[in-house]
Image 1 (spheres, one colour):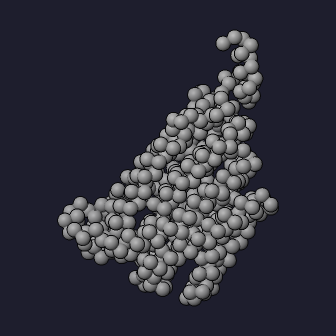
Image 2: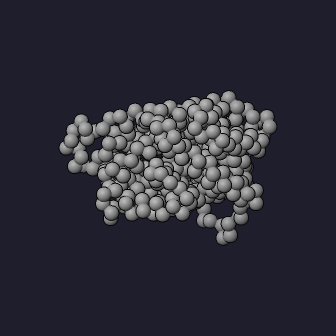
Image 3: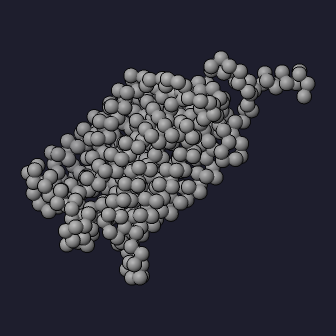
Length: 439
């Protein structure tokens, strides 16, 4: 190639470096057909993502959305089953005073008496709350580490590690005839649930500030659709006891809810196959190849404030949302199908709000206003439950309010955070914004 031809080529594909050093040119079509091809320029400025063509951004965003939808379907399957799962373990293990279930139940009793609670049904509610809190706590602890690791090793590689953990969690649930195996499955699941935050990091990698809200809205939409269908699937498969069809399966450790666990396992397996084939690496090459700076840049104060607000919201909202199936189990004796229908209603309304309101309102009035409206809706929903806990009309009205909060607050806060989380520590910064846990 002559020097004139090289000069012409450089003028067509050169990317302006962000650090003042020469940067090798790259083609406009940044992603190759291989799954691990790089999508971003060496520069870490917001102009990098604009260098991607619209077709590439659309393809990656679609891949993230479909994979996240399957992931959320898999982990919402268990939601309507928790009350009766704990009833099953109570019947099978409470006679053994040394079992993990009996030891934990004694601690639950002590806490119940300390707060002045009465009734055997409260044991199940408190027990379920403890399990949900364990999952959420582990997720909260590990999220920044997952984000930091993705900044060093790449989004796709860490995402696949998380998927392996999710697969192991579902397998343990399949063979969780003893209670301690079920608890172990929740621990493994809590420590490996980084799919949502990594999806947010991937979208942040490939979008600009102007297009980010639209991309992040798809994360919220995947949540809403997953909550619409996942609990109903869990309720359906819970009616099929695999050990009842073939009693010899009991020797493998299967429990009455192993069919639901097996279906969740199949979904995770399909997601791993799909991500391995379709998702390219989106972390800019320079972030992985260069040595880290001697002194990392401190987080912006606004990001720290947003993280505190997000953590407070999750602590209150997730705890109350997770206990909703226990309320309906205790107050209304809901069946698996009724539990799934109620959670499906929340997901259906949230999907409508996410697709028809959140994204448009964010452009019109800003993410902050969207978050404030969602918080007001959340407060109204739980106020209705507190004022009329025995009225089904109040229950369903509260479910609608919860759906509005679900479709607005998390998406708005994450979108605001992503605007402050650019640079070489995007994954670590967004790790302070894990999804609501307990599922």
